Length: 211
Image 1 (tube, rainbow, N blue to C red):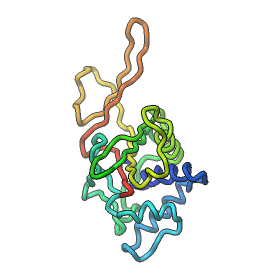
Image 2: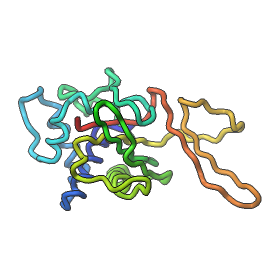
Image 3: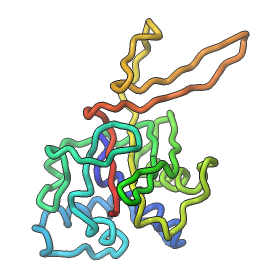
Image 4: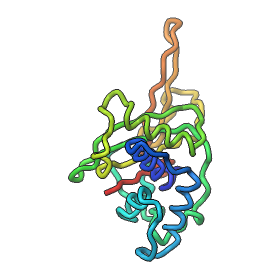
């Protein structure tokens, strides 16, 4: 399952890119987040300004949400990360997986897609997430590149693609529960894939907003 740290890594990678500086390593980011999470609210501050700016926004904003589309950022109370929650107490997730990174803008309660790119090839998350965070932010041809001024209105969502299985019947999947990848041939030509995101709560997707 994607975690709050994965979403923080998206923000860190994007801000580092926009500020033309080196991105925090995955290990350094995890250590900073663990230090923040293990102490009661307000007692300590993170040393790194870029990460502090993200996690200080609102503890409840770092929240694993339902595996829905791009229209909701509500948290699941049982899984929401707060300053009193240690990430070391949560189940360890995968270290590699196919993944997608989605950027949304959240303005006046309205959420709009701002970029989404990923891959079906398995990636080491420590490298794949920051790479695709930048790619989806500045290279999604449907949108202009995200600017630094937009960062406070951004929401990041990380989707890890797991548990693929072939189906015997093209109707053997449930809209809103399963994602689907289509691949077929017609008249000797191989066509690409189409995927949809599941909308159930039990999905490997996490969102985090700055605001």
